[in-house]
Length: 321
Ligand code: KIV
Image: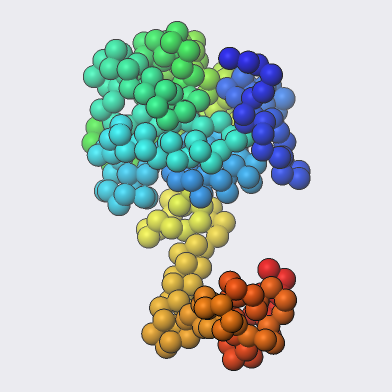
């Protein structure tokens, strides 16, 4: 392939948002330079575009989509094919952020060979730039790295182990468990992991692990000393229909916003106030003579009566359009 053009560079940078493309080595540089890494999940084209255009460094197509998008009780039932479908949509939207695909439960626990074959699918069929796997699977991380597939590890509260853990519980609360977690993190780093997500562990444990590693840690419920932070998109904007975990900060109330918009739409339909004539097409010649230029030609959208009926605000908007 020609190295003269990298497609990700094609999008114009947003003001104030650094370009170029975020890569696995770039994450390590950010750690060295003390620059915090922002990460967020996304599962579809529209939200992935928003997340990418907002300058978030890493987008994880998380298996949390099983719960927040597909409505399952936990993450265990989502399949490789479903994850591939969502990863492709995200990949089409993203130009700058690093796109990481979560390997779902059952796609890598059986054997290294199976994990490798499934990881190849995420890179080849969906355009993932790294895969994330849960647990201290050192042999698999090594094999993936040897196969040129960057890996993000995931330690601590690993949701695919929900049954073994007996629920979603904070992990590594004893000195022994903390030591084991740090040993696992170091082993993953030595095996070639490019970053490690630390989830649901005491801040003190995350701080120690972060200091012990050359690769970045990305925390979720693991305190502020991690090299980066990740949240689930639906938690951030309140689209989960459930109380938030302690570590979640809600930055917007999309539930209230969407609910209000949907209710107003339903009322407008029921009261015959949507659509108005200005929102309808006309036969040639039936358009308003009083509408501004551009509204009274063959594909005009308003006629005189409808134009007069519109609020001043909507008229202003239509004239500017
Ligand atoms: O699936 C997911 O969203 C995750 C994050 C919580 C790290 O694994």
